[in-house]
Amino acid sequence: MAFLKSSIKFIILISVLLSFSCSENTEEDASPQNETIDGDGATNQDSTNEEGSGDENTDNDDSPGNVLGLTMDNWKLNGFTGNPNSNAVYEDNVLEAINSDYDSYNDLNYFYTDNEWTYFKCYRGLGGSANSNNPRVELRELSNGNNVYWDGGSGNNTMTFTVKVDRLPQDTDNDGGVLCFAQIHGPSNTVDDVIRVQFIGDENQTTGGVRLKISGYITEVVQNSSLIIDDGYQLGTSYTFTITYNNGTVKLFKGSEEIFSEDIGTSTTGNYFKVGNYLQSVQGASYTGSHGIVGIKDLSITH
Image 1: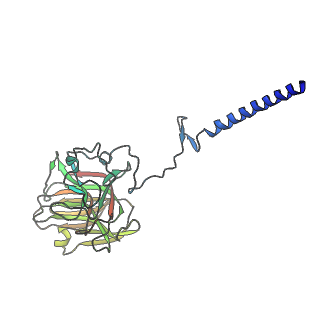
Image 2 (image 1 turned 180 degrees about the horizontal axis):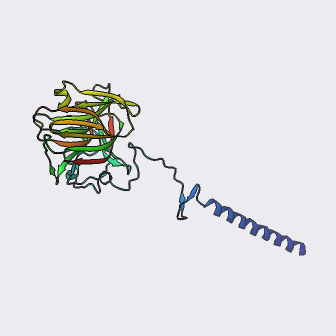
Image 3 (image 1 turned 90 degrees about the vertical axis):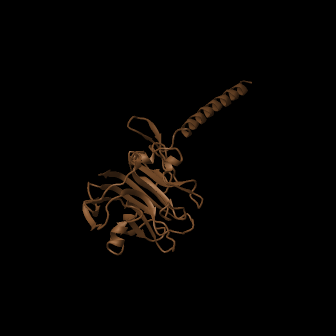
């Protein structure tokens, strides 16, 4: 009997020890994996999410309009409502059409941010405005919430911005891609586009070299053809440009370097700045999902 009692005590002791060991292992397994300690001593999980590019959904601390410093007084957004397909509806003022504002508007199909860049995404095969069959997701300059028209014969009419083009669309002929990221628009019945600043390259191109293309009245009429500059431009690389139109002369600067200058030689009234993503050479193209992506930051205008 004494031997039996001793055996029972031994079994109970072993059970207690095994239970304590399992409890320790369970606590270890429940602790965070790949943890880091921040400066305040708080424990944070190590995220495995990669940083999003302009073509991905990213975490936003602010709206794309606020990141770019837009207000309803100074800019309106030309673009689309609805999903990107042949049934998307073009709106001359998207925010007005959906009763929204720059504090809250964000649409990953067309207008979004990674908290540094504000991205403009536009698809071929979507409708155009009353004056163009090329689709656009583009800002139009305002003054006190109203359309503004200024005279390029006087003043200090200047727009400066930093741009990064991440993708070109596929044109109607399926043999290249071109988009406009900035322009001065003039009277539609005379000068129309004073100048369009564009990148041209391959269809659906996302990396590698592109060329700068300057079109509009200032080259196509005054100089008889668009001007193409091959100066090592790359997709995914940022460039700071300044466009000026003063005393009848249109100029384009890359950084502080003047890369284009020409006199307009005609009426200088009825102008306004535009910036964003205006697809070119896609008139009549069907919707295929092909699109262009433009990032803009550090946008400013003076007159």
